[in-house]
Every structure is written in structure tokens, then in C-alpha cells.
Picture 1 (tube, rainbow, N blue to C red):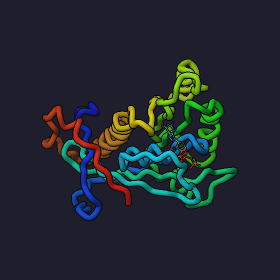
Picture 2: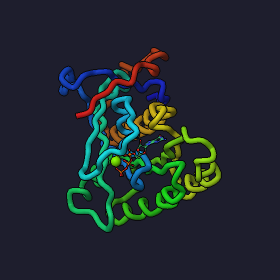
Picture 3: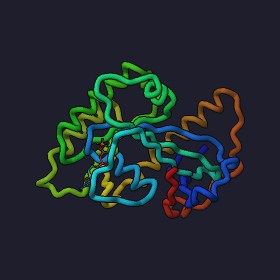
Length: 226
Ligand SMILES: Nc1nc2c(ncn2[C@@H]2O[C@H](COP(=O)(O)OP(=O)(O)OP(=O)(O)O)[C@@H](O)[C@H]2O)c(=O)[nH]1
Ligand SMILES: [Mg+2]
């Protein structure tokens, strides 16, 4: 099985056109981080290729969905965007974390505390779940800001990434820079891990449909938000 993100496409479909029966599997990704770092904006950019200046309300858990094609098979990716947690999780929130395949920790360039707090979010989750089973990454958002408005530097990001052993991505939900390629790489890893685990379990994976079209990677990033 090739693991290059070049094989990883996103299908443009409207929700009423989706043939659910053709979806091979679904994966869950939770997004975590301080308020105002742009978590919801990142998901809206990725799922709907849209950005607005105003903050999104965060009173309740929001779920964003997107269909991917990987080796010509469809996967449903569900992004869980919870309201900020304070001290503890209720049972349904613990279930959400237990059932997720990946966790995205987000900080933003204009908020140095949000980078420091990545440890807090990480530690917070260790109370509830075994993080070793999850695919995880660090996202540094608001890359579009001018240098004088950035309060985080490359060394700090690099150090955090090494300390927590998280791959990091620098993105801008505002301009869309790096959003699609970073998310693709992250989700690609989740699907590859799933396929590897499937093989270990003896389940067969059909590889006869591997993409041979290098241009597939550049297909339009279609949207589906349900
Ligand atoms: N300059 C810039 N602003 C951004 C970017 N992403 C988000 N913002 C702005 O940051 C603010 C907060 O964005 P949200 O997406 O609501 O932040 P959030 O992390 O979901 O916040 P909570 O839901 O409160 O936890 C909004 O005013 C966005 O327009 C970005 O890439 N660049
Ligand atoms: Mg939000």
C-alpha cells in the first residue's frame, strides 16, 4: 500500500448526492485548543473552503463531515469541535475521545499562551484516554499575520513539537495556506494506520484500485458539512 498523500483525494459532492452505501469506513477527529485560536475556522475552511472574520459561537459540540477518496474508495471523515472544557468531561465527551482516531491540537501565532497550553490539553486528555492509540498533530494557525503580530517563533514551535512528539503544521484558515495539504497528510496517516491494523487482523484489503493518476491529488476540495 502506497502511503503518499498524492493518492489522497477529496470528493466534491453535495450531501443529497452522497451514496452512503459506497462509503467504506468513517474516521473521527477531535480538535482541541484554547478559545479563539481558530479551531472552527480551520474546519470550516477545510470542509467548506470559507472564512469569515467573526468568531464562531461555541456553545455546543459541532460536527463537520467530509468525504474523501483514498485509492478510489470513499471515507467519511467526521470532525468533532467541542466547546471549551474547563475541569472535566461528562460521559458523552469521554466517549467522543475514546472513539476518535485522531486529535488535532491547535494554537495560534498571535497567542503565545495557546502554545504553552498545548501541554495542558494533552495532559487533560490523558486523564480520560490512552493517547498512544491516537494519531495526533499540532497545528499553528494564523500564519497570515505579519511578523510584528506573531508572538510565537519557529524555535518554540519546534521545541513543543519535539517535547510532545507531535508533527506540526503551520497554516492559515484565513488564506487557506497549508490547510488542505496538512489535513490530507494527517488523515492519510489515520487511514494508513487503519489499513495496517486491518491486515494485522487478517482482514483483506483490496489494493487493485490503487490510483495511478498523479494529478488526482490536486482535485478540488469539495465540501460536505452536515
Ligand atoms: N488572521 C487570522 N484570523 C483567524 C484565522 N483563523 C481564525 N481567525 C479568527 O480568529 C477568531 C476566532 O476564530 P474561531 O474559529 O471562532 O476560534 P475557535 O478556536 O473556534 O474559538 P472557540 O470556539 O471559542 O474555542 C475569529 O475572529 C477568526 O476570524 C487565521 O488563520 N488568521
Ligand atoms: Mg470554535
